[in-house]
Image 1 (cartoon, one colour):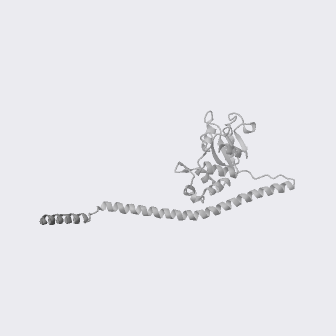
Image 2 (cartoon, helix red, strand yellow):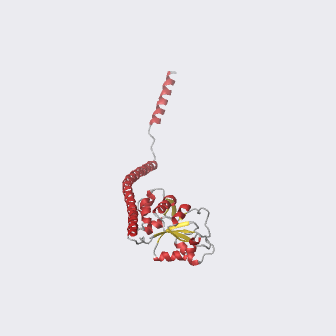
Image 3 (spheres, helix red, strand yellow):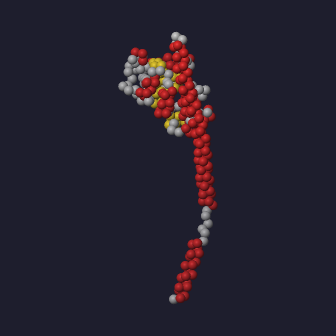
Length: 260
């Protein structure tokens, strides 16, 4: 019996030693583990770098927003001052010509001649209730006159521009329609032009800045809702005759409120 116990103990100790012995790990598994660890380390480094960049950008964004706000207030104050001076002198104050227009398509694709159809394509107004910003030049004014029966347009104010971009703003990134939910979307597309946040984008559009073309191209055409009560007399009546199409001047802001 003692001999059997000793034999059993020897076998169990051998099995324990064998189980405790290190099993050789394949070289391919070691390489995969190292590669995955390198990926994790690089992700951590990029996340930390992005956080540091965001902290720096946040300070710059706040300073720019304050600068833009003071600029808008100063411009409005000057206009009020010029109007008062003109009134005292018995004259009229004529503000500078508008540089920006917001154009909304009011009619579908049926029964449109080829030339206006092509102009609507150039303006990126491919569907009814689509809206785009347009820089007012001699050429664009002529284009708007040719597509006058199919669009409503006018001069948007700061509130309309800001609400459109904040509420309905989508960006064109690699040919895809991406919502502008973060400043990083704008910075990736327009950072090389000095536009890093949504307030920069609003300022560039509203003031028709030097990089207006790039900023406007980045913005996807706005998909607006139908106005309250629908379009009235959109086929034959101008806005001046209680219709829908044509130049509304500053009254376009009321239409934007209804459709935004």
